[in-house]
Length: 265
Image (tube, rainbow, N blue to C red; front, side, top):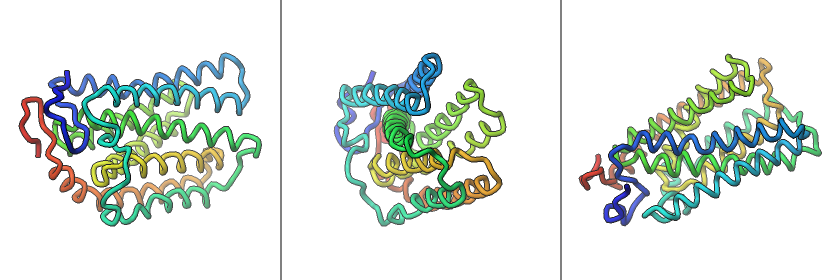
């Protein structure tokens, strides 16, 4: 149970004694909804546009449930990250984020049929909001009372590992392993940005743009596409190294409380 007297200002933090089981349970929610929607699209024989919209609907329902969880918790939506970003200069004005997207666009090109573009745009926005609400919003808040460092690493690890669910959909193991590494790195940068800036919006916009660009390129695995993803990952790694000490200082200054009400540093 969350003690409401401990969480009256600053970033959202749930002072739970058994935080990891709760974090894992919450992290599974968007995965289950997306998997269920994907299965529904396949069973109904939906075409590409229909499948994209069905999965988007599943992600939207999951996101709404996540927002509901936020609303009934002691913290406000603002403290979960639905606010303007602070310390943008410390985050290099988020410049590396669009650069990673541009790298993918230039190395993969555009192969998505025009009639499906709008459907995939809706899908990527729904998925981005859904996953950021649950992972960088709720799960980060659940783990944060154990310390910012552990929360960032734990959230990123869960985000990466749960992307292995794509194996159940028949994805090639090598591609799934590559996605695991990328998802952990992506999750690390996104979590650091939330801690540093106090906002989910940069991560949501980046997440949607990244996914949409990959859909435009047909999720290509050509040599050029793999080189592009490698370059984007290298840039994300450098960005994470730059963000880490700044986010840790910002997180320590916020001083979330542990389950006994003591400040966590």
